[in-house]
Length: 339
Image (cartoon, rainbow, N blue to C red; front, side, top):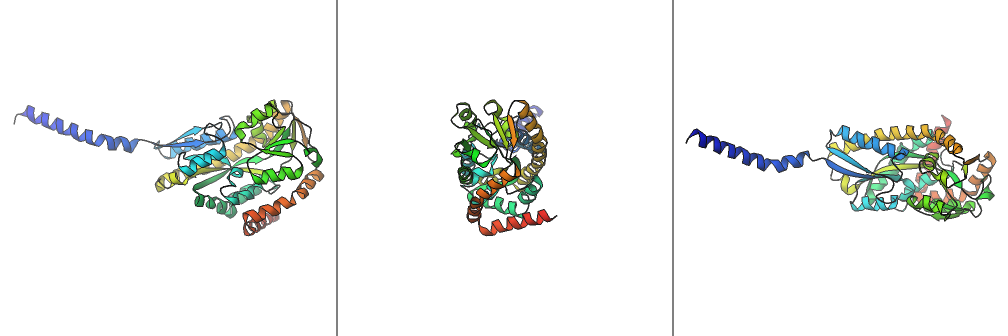
């Protein structure tokens, strides 16, 4: 065999071997793509927290996992994204715990009016045994909870009148989340509570289909509600968490190393997002005032009247989430308040 023929045969064999390996090699290096949806815009605290999560996943996985972010409700409202996760059509999202109550009733605990006195209490309970127990319940329904983020203490805005006392709620058409506790709470306070997806809210306020809404300062600012709302009342009536979740169908297909990347990135994003939200809260309130909103704070006496009025709601929440879980939460809060 001549050297030319020998070289030709060797080159052909190498080419065939490389060709056979190419698909497997290409498949091996193709990054895992993760669609991650959220409701607010890119400039919001939710948007910034989502970017930290995506960047951290890329860093920790060495580029082998890529998170593609879909903000501003582009994949639909929270409830629609939850259904997409359940069906495996979407991998991940961050959204309100309040919209999960129809899937996992224990999530209703976080909707309790005036449950937490401050963010320190919220962190301790959400990240402690009670919060972990409620997150674990999601897996029975086809979702995996990673970490809780902070939306913040919710406050009231409207275009009808300054709300300074309980009676001022009377007749206000108030958008609330699609959640029974929120509906019942504001109906009890005298408002005409109307459930509506967040993605439809600005337009509804602009067209006066509703008079008002309730959200943390950061959301009120980033969503530009000051353009269509005159009055803001500092009520701090509910501490509102967000939760980062994955589809269980997607999660179960991951390796242990991939799950660790996502969990570690989620923990990093939680620390960033909570600090970011709290740093911006006071600034947001000042900025809303600067943009012309009329701001007032409920007196201690009026806040007390509201708490008393909502007593039956708390009893109902305890029954719905389970008396044992309610008692465990109250015991934990009592312990924290003694420190």
